[in-house]
Length: 335
Image (cartoon, rainbow, N blue to C red; front, side, top):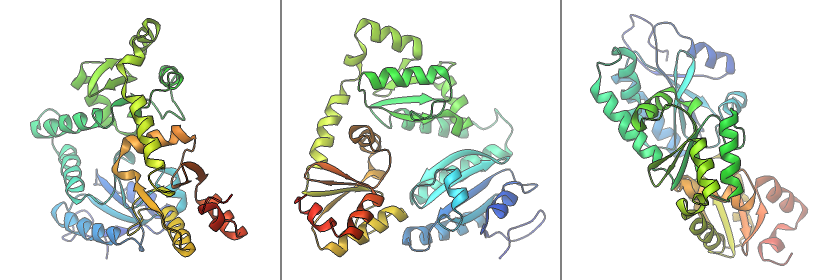
């Protein structure tokens, strides 16, 4: 099937089988919004979301809907840091403006409606869209007990102020989640108005704005910073409990029944073949644990395997142990 061209009468989900085709679709004339589904044929939730995309294509004929097999076009997946499927990216004028991880049909529908409407309605004339943005901003600032809106990521800050505030938070062992405001222009501009704070970075605790770098520095000097973020220590206790919940504990994207990324699927297959009992934790269901465990164990990616509370490693290490014949003894705590 082909996508609707200007003046066409049908709409469909277009497949991008190569990086070049993906770039062509981003640059289609006459279409301001492009929605890309990074999917995998082995994941049933992806097949389901392809059907959702097909229905949305009928309702929004002037939006381009694209499906891209994540593992078949790795250069595109790596560029946009696709680590699980399904993942949806939203583009306007070839620029990424939004992202949705997971099979959430209602949220996908809302995002498509909001971005499609903002594409076609003049600025300032859509009060409903503004209201939706405020709801989204509220959810974002409450996504974790301590939330930092910054330029870049904690691993790769993209301005000196963001780098400094990350260093301060890390030095005080404060557990925080972050949002890269370069990844979403709507959030970047909207949050300035929502919180009446014109610059970045911005730090929020329990949904309340603390301030920017200067205020965080003042709180550090006065000794108040540690008391403002008390949940950091509680999170550490929670992480200890989780990694010791079972003798063999796997932190992954998805669960034993439905793995939500290729790496998690592979490690599940290896563990199942050993016959050793193990428990799993879906890090996609808890952003605080997802970010906190990376720092707690100094291991930046998932899946992560623990035996008797000690980190074994990720997929590559588990593969090596399996190939060398050591995995079974490691899982039994004999090594």
